[in-house]
Image (tube, rainbow, N blue to C red; front, side, top):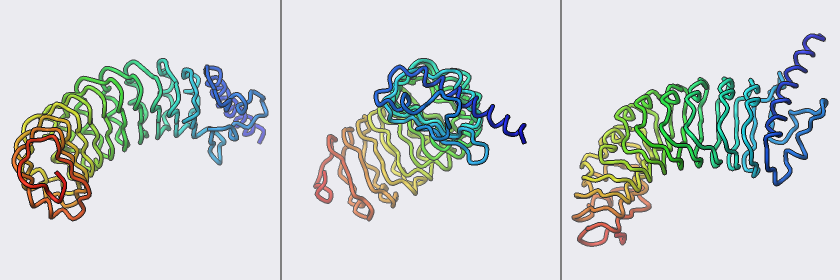
Length: 320
């Protein structure tokens, strides 16, 4: 029994040491949360520390959530010693600097949220080490360069949010491997195209790639994703016309947002076949002709925005 207790104490000490290393690398703790609560005393129970949750049986740290605390600092390599960590949340702080490769040892991770911080540089390829990862949120940082293809080998991934960074280049074709993904958020970057392999994402429900540099070819793969409920491609460089049979494979779509592009031609006459549509947002394009009366058949429609085009004829339902 003594041996078991000794092992347990050693593990707790390992986790406590890792957390205290993080505390030592915090340069600003405006609410004194860690300063007042995370103690270096050997008898301090880390499972009671603010932001820390432990497993019921092994008492190892399984969840570290320091989101919305106004913290500033860097991530130390020692954080990679939290070997039982399942969720790591640092959202809405001011962490910066490089991400230490030692984090790749956290093989039990299912969720990473580094959103709204000040991380910069390229996204490390070792993010592909987290075989159990279901959610990765790196939005609102200063990441630049390419998305590493290794991320798209994470077969359990359900949500990937890389929005509001400075990412560019081609989106790796390996994105087609994400057979479980339900949400992809790449807004406010510099991507120019979507790979055809995206058309095989049979569980994808939400796709946000607004405010990038997409061209008309980006539309080809997404029109085949029958599971899509929200498609937001606002504010890109797409030109050309929308196909009349746009709804052929989009049976679940609820929100279309193609506003702020250079699309032209007629508004698709068969748009009414997307029977689940709630919102149609096509304003600030170069559409011409009249508004199809058949849109009146969309019984769930609550919003239609077609302004700043070259449309003619009467207003549709009082909305132009």
